[in-house]
Amino acid sequence: MKNTLVIFFFFFGIIATAQNKKYNSEDLSITPLIDGTLMVPEKTEKPPLAIIIGGSGPTDRNGNQQMVVNNSIKFLAEGLYDNNIASFRYDKRIVKQMKMRALNEKNIRFDDFIEDATAVLNYFKKDERFSKVYIIGHSQGSLVGMVAAQQAADGFISIAGAGQEIDDVIIDQLANQAPGLVDNARTSFDDLRANGVALNYSPGLASIFRKEIQPFIFTWMQYDPKVEITKLNIPVLIVNGDKDIQVQVSEAELLKNAKPDATYAIIEKMNHVLKEIEGNDLENSKSYNIYNLPVAPKLISVISDFIKK
Image (tube, rainbow, N blue to C red; front, side, top):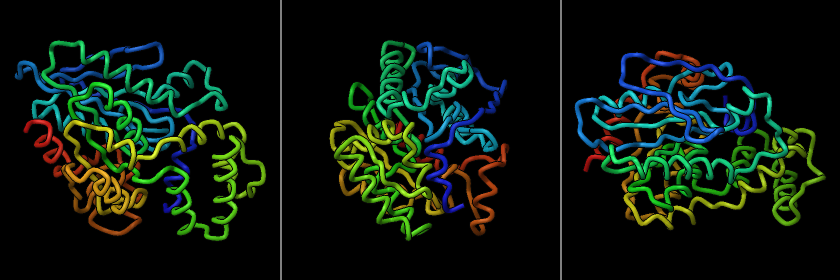
């Protein structure tokens, strides 16, 4: 399970989705590539709205990927709804592209995800049903949302977001998982940053440096979360779980150090897919594929209190 983060960053597959008819919701298409679900509490006039941005890979609006169905984002949206907070969660554009059989890895850019998040933000800023519009970014979505929120958001929430540039995050992972590949990876990242291409990478690093995805990695490397978070002149909440085996608490600490005035919360027993874990890494890994396990209640209360204060 320790290599999950790297795998998720570069995995492309088929998506499974699930909908809950219990809540007042509607499906919306914001652009030809952005389809999502809007949930609006019926009892609250002009509630705040949270735009929820999923993590890496072909993540759908519910937080799921092929063979990874935990409904983490869906349960987060429902928890906010129960606290009278509206939400919009959406499929990443690569989900739609895969359904259309139009996905070409070599054309994917990190900036595409920022463009999509900005389009969603601009759409809902014009919607007078909502008092304020917040962005919640999970994992990779933290950096995406961090940049998009600089435009017009009323607040930003990072959940399990990296505090380092992506190449440094991966180097740290490799140091724990495959230390023999660290030197070659560092050289390859340096080549990619300097020249826009890396040629002399180890076959063991092909999942990261394949020719088709190097343009995506290169554009991702241009953003430093520690820099981007300082550009936010709005309320910021930084959240991480102490059972997260993909994004360590130290990453959240880097964000907090860069943005000292941010609200900061470490959720006990919460893992990367927002579930409470009482036991060991085996329980942790199994939770990634338990479709009906709710998210940590403390996460819902921390986010709700932040948005409503």
